[in-house]
Length: 93
Image (cartoon, rainbow, N blue to C red; front, side):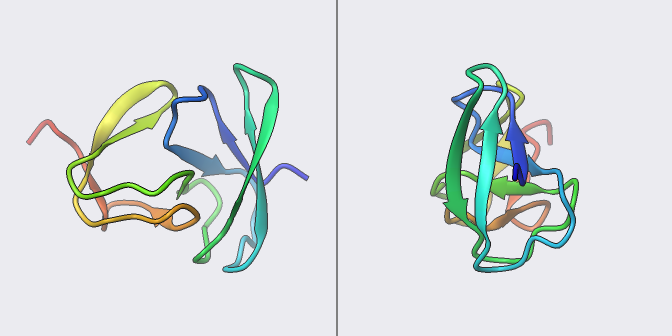
C-alpha cells in the first residue's frame, strides 16, 4: 500500500494520500519521477493531505516538495514527523 507521494527524489517531504496514518505506521512513499518506493516510520499521526518529513531536517534547512523550494524549517523535524505550519514557514515573509 502507498501511504504518501513525493514527486522528486530530492523532495524532503511527501504528501499523505490515505487516512488513518498513526504513529508507528511503516509508511511506503512513492517517488513519482523514479517510480520507486521508499520507506519511513511515522513518528506522529499524519492527517490525509498533510506533509510527512522524509528525512531529518534542522532549523534553517530548505524544504522541497514537488521538486520546488516551499519554505524553511523553523523547528527541527525528524523523518516521519508531521511537517506543517508549526515547523515550516514560507521564505516570502
